[in-house]
Image (tube, rainbow, N blue to C red; front, side, top):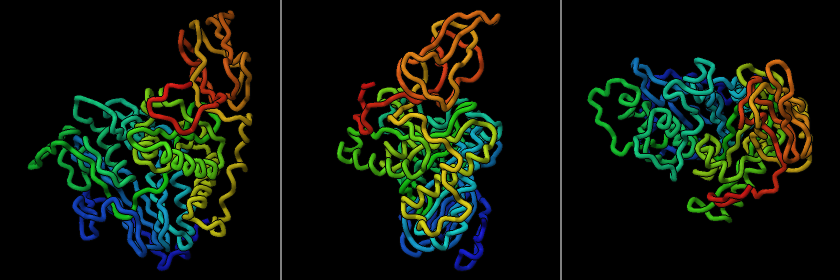
Length: 451
């Protein structure tokens, strides 16, 4: 269904042409007091070179870095500005370049919501591809430093003696646009007159002087998030699920504020309609740098409800899971108050039309393991989506001739999210990604070391 022309006051949809400069008369340069704002009544919203008046859809680009060849690294942007003011929902995908279904969910969800924009109260901001450098080679990591781009978002507690590298600066610029916060330690967006990007990427700075210390400043007008869904995929053969991070308290926020934030997050995750898997305990969460993921930073650094949707396997678009993901996004938009229930497009079903319910009734959290005690070839005995009890055999390790070497058993109850890729395993390698029983708290001190 696509009735966008009929849904708008004037049927307009714009497609920005990136000039590499987001400044101009609409106040999107770095000096505007409107930068990083939330939408007010009858306000045009803008990000990068995309600008949408109430009742309009706009497509464009947000420049986040200068490349050595002199061109800009640009992120695609779609703005759906509802006819009435209300909350702002951000949708991001493709932070890992091989996670195709996540990209497709963001694209199709924004199309569905654009079709009913005359009924919307608020704004949808979509960035379908957060990592173009990964997408271009269908790889999880970018070629800037061959690192995970989803572990470099801002964390005020992170310490480093070196200046931030390019991926960290790109992530900081996107984070500043999402949250409306100024980030110390990263350069301003190339779109807004970046004074460091040329040096970062090996290009020519010309007359520009370096910023010391460099910062990422809020970008856009009326686009600060009230909630965010970051769309991913997991391993080969993985079942879909939504990850609910624990909310950390301490210097950032009080325990009471963390409880309120966690409650808000829980309502949105429930509205998404996928089986919910809680994130690792706090100590492991921080050790894995997940507080510096897209959703982790927006939630635990900025205090904005945000979660990750894991949409099956990577590299190939799964059309059934796209439909389920779109239904989940629309469910969140309804819960947030962006979309009235009566305005949900007829083409949008329920996630349960596609997904099986979780095979266990108790709360679960992510767990990588158990690990193999010997090297060999893995033969899994429990499929993704199947439950197990403590003591059940999950896999056998055999030699290359097929002779049995060892068995790997579960040390707790849960179910299999996905198997490890490949057959070869070494001592200490985790054999699967599991959802295991979780009796831990959803609100915890940052330094909590509980299991």
